[in-house]
Amino acid sequence: MRLRSRRRRPTVRVTQHGDPGDDDLLFVLGWGNKPGHRSVEWLLDRLTYEGYHVHAVELPTNGWEFEGQYVSPVRAYAVDRDIDLVLSHSTGGLVAAHLDLAVRNVFLSPWWGTATAGLDGLLLPVVRRLPTTRPLVPAGISRTDLGELKLAAELADGPDNASPAFLRMIHGAQESLPPFRPDDVVFVSLSDRVVDVRAISDRTPASNLVPYDGGHEFFASEGRERTLSVVLDALDGVDPSSLRLGGAGAPGSDDSTDGTERPQSMD
Image (tube, rainbow, N blue to C red; front, side, top):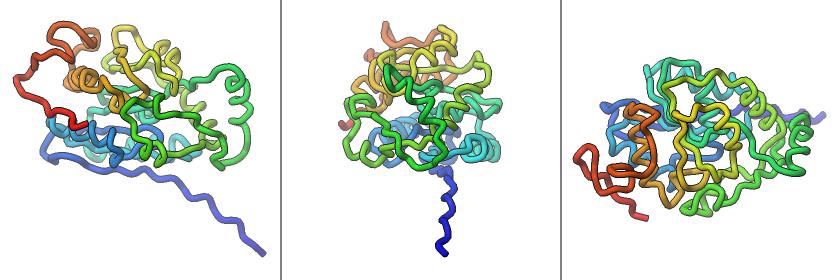
């Protein structure tokens, strides 16, 4: 008799970057992102240069229990280390929104809704109900969707498909998002084709929403240096209503607000 193999339980991985004596920052990565990807590595280097000890969280790409496999492990890690500042991207933004901790959040293109159109919008609810964890639904994400600087090797290193169980789990988490917290900041590209921009704007007060030019991953987009400056301000606790891209002394200008010169991109 042939026994059926048990499903391998997804696990959360965390790597630490920078000086342990610096301020702790939990960075919850998006679906398929890894610290070794060049675009993610670029952002980690900038954050550590700015004085953060970054705890980079790599999430499972094919889970089926949102609380047990995603939220609880990340929450426990943050609580054990008394981390009170969280940066998150895409799927990581969905997880971070559910942590229910006394932390300040900076969200980057959070996956609070799924972008669908036409036939895809009609089929997705049906596909989500399929009782399988097999990744058989094409992700349909291109390099240009993510950013002009995204490497083909990085895209190939990520998942090509998602399972109905994973999509069902994500939908449930999106439908049960907790109330928005007034000190949180959300960065979003209005041309994002990966997540539902409408879902983000519907949930986020206008004063807490910071639009940027680029793809779903600002850190893989050509304007990332400008966006990063405002992200750093948000992490520093600048009032959300004053965070805007452009203008005198703003990101992209020659003036440095702290008198230091930030490292230049080697791209």
